[in-house]
Length: 511
Image (cartoon, rainbow, N blue to C red; front, side, top):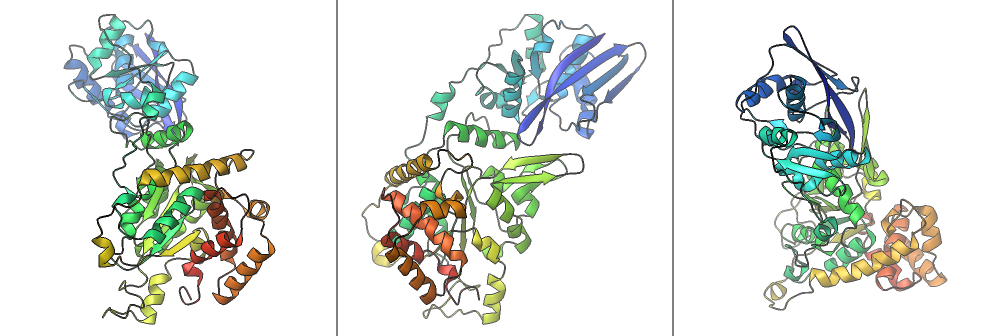
């Protein structure tokens, strides 16, 4: 008897429906074809034990299973449940009148219970697009798949529940989640709040500007100055995610298997990889490409603490994704693209000892050590960082002050207002949503300067020895400062403030 059941394979952040054809005939043998990997080939042992422990058996006949399309590589153990149900229906052990209306996925344990799978959300989206009635999957993944309206999503704990459903014995109910209610459960009391930070008013102002314009930022200062503390609080002042952004972000985390019984992600991600990370782990890849840290930070913040400690080649592979806001991973037979639109926040000590030009510190670094330390950060990477700010340690009187600082919620209101102005400005442009994404043409159009501002910028560039690359960055940041004040034009005060945020371009820093 020939039976068709349906599963799904995930490539990048999109799913492809897989037709699993099970044929049982006279003879003996178990033949699995259609480019399965080792995890799928081993499934026969798991299926045999799971069926036996639930009162069923693997037929002692010739079982041929084809996974179509046959030229597409299939991987992972998530097809165990698909194959098991197909074998039971093909051998006549259970009914399968409606089996072709459902996507069935799940990894089997030997007792028949189910283990979680990756990519449940993209699979559910594809199932809805292709007109399937429902989707069976492990209970741990049910919340992320149930985000998709118009699809019956059944979270099951073991293979017996699926069998009972098709036999008409069970009382399995689909999981229903109100996506909009789930999405609007935002946290107005973030775990890390700017009200906890004593002093550092100029740095907070800088972070507010970075958040308002989506600008990449680097914090430079000695150990203990509060660089990490400030960076961790940046997501709390970013505008709330839109529903589209939340779905995009949830899809990536679903593919990476990082959602732990969570539905729609409504908080912007904050990723902070260790400096020993490899370039594949950072940008994504592997023999079966998986999203890297830059994609996991999509629509959120990627924090690189102690930037010069990262291997230079690791930092260099990040240059293109920073520019294109997506990363493409190519292999011999296929190519996948992951989105990677994130805010880069980096921190670094000004020298190997951490105390550059500090007269009170006994530790000093030689010019050679300084050059070797700073040479890990290339000019092209700095090109893509709009704001450089020096962080100084907080004096005792500020640390001991009991007065509460401004909360993240209050700062976020101003940031959101500035972002709304930018959304309106770029409404006709598909790939530009905030100031940091402007190219040279947009800068000329939206950052036009009067004579006073031009003169101020010219003087600053000559006196401070600012490099040519700083020119466009200063204009972008000035435009954001103007948006925070709801000012239609960039004026000299906005330019003056933006000039302060280019520390690394000054003569004497990077040679």
